[in-house]
Image 1 (cartoon, helix red, strand yellow):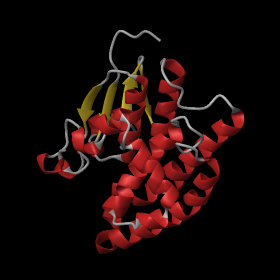
Image 2 (cartoon, one colour):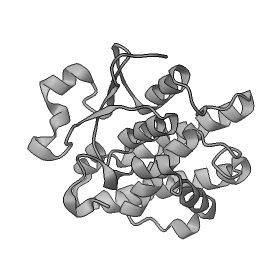
Image 3 (cartoon, one colour):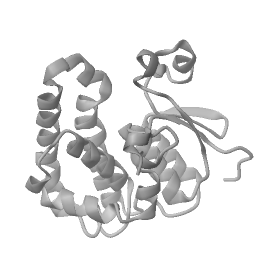
Image 4 (cartoon, one colour):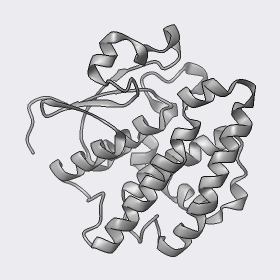
Length: 216
């Protein structure tokens, strides 16, 4: 789809959901602009009335694209996939496509929301234990699923939306000191994906709003 203006990603360097969208743009070869939203500074720039008008949930990402504004990373990824050329992020085969959606939803609905910034800010001193518990709980379900579905990547040998969801979640798991040795399939897939340029250029350590002490 030809478009006159670049998409604009309103995101945060370390946001899992923002990273998913950055990966999708990179895999598709789509140029886009970034307008960082600092989730910490000034009490959280996502909580301003200006940003609320863009995304009423006051979360990142929000993506301005083709004259509309989309939030919710999986919806954004599927829109990019359906409107831009390049490698398909959802398989053509209905069974494989369902498996990709299942894995993506398990991560995006069953793990990540329970350890996102808004939630862990409410947990105070217990935030590390809380986050580890829910990431481990999710990975204990994800590991046997991936043993069945994975080839080179999460579902077979082609990169998909499931892989886009996996890598940011493993990054979070490592931040919260989850023992990845218990999840050899997840660990193997993550290591393979991090060798791919689209996952490298979109990494939190390489974004315009990455603090200097975290920059690669």
